[in-house]
Image (cartoon, rainbow, N blue to C red; front, side, top):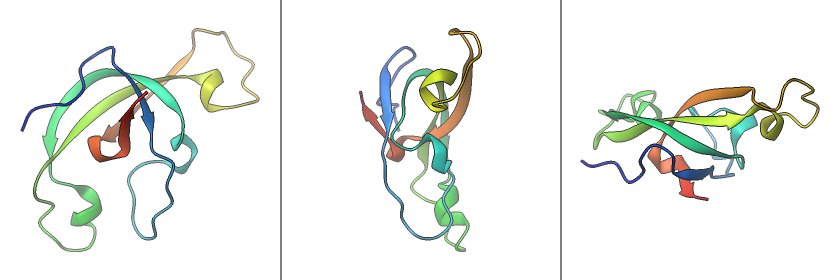
Length: 94
């Protein structure tokens, strides 16, 4: 499996609200950031939560978001960021 994104690529987290156990935080859905790094392929935890084998493995990325883009009332320095690990099937090119 090869990563579809590389460090520095701009991405947007899909804005969807499927039922059940999801590993992508609600507050980050629909937000845009940049790929900080690829963490490699891992079993899909959304499938593992229901007793499946989680295969095929999904690429996991660390995505960096500006705090002010995540929280509308953020008043800290412009350079503050938050990094979140997100699986590839939640990401679109920005």
